[in-house]
Length: 224
Image (tube, rainbow, N blue to C red; front, side, top):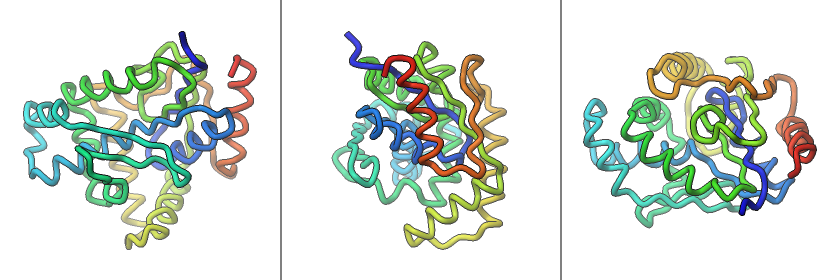
């Protein structure tokens, strides 16, 4: 028996999905599941093993034998790979540049989507990513497509990285976002796409709290 609703928040890189999803989960007393962190963690491990990014068999084999663990904390989500806490490593510029290559691999996605479904099937969960509402949980009770302008997304990302002590530039991040948008929206497997029944929310000019309140209110109307 499901414990509550499945809330799917999709959108492009830098739209504020993680921050908003954490807030919604806290407001509703739900579990927050950062699916993007799963791909980032696997990307980090593939980098440590210096795998060939074109070799999907190698990447899929790595995914199958990797133990991923996510834990909610006051600061967000802690991510463990094979018993090692990699939370501080998976948001680096190097991982940012590589994660789309791994995420578009069909055999890798098959492994991680199966894990995401197992983790979320009991409900009372807020999941965010690129294809939660369209592929992972097409029957989610609440689906939101969260967007923001490329300029706003680059500014937010710069602020996040500066807070972590990572040095980069607004120009570099803007270019990364442009490339990521193109890769995510044109890939053949699970491209970034708004589900037909998703609610479209533009976060430009709004705080994460304001967006989260809107989503929480919609969720309560639907039984959360």
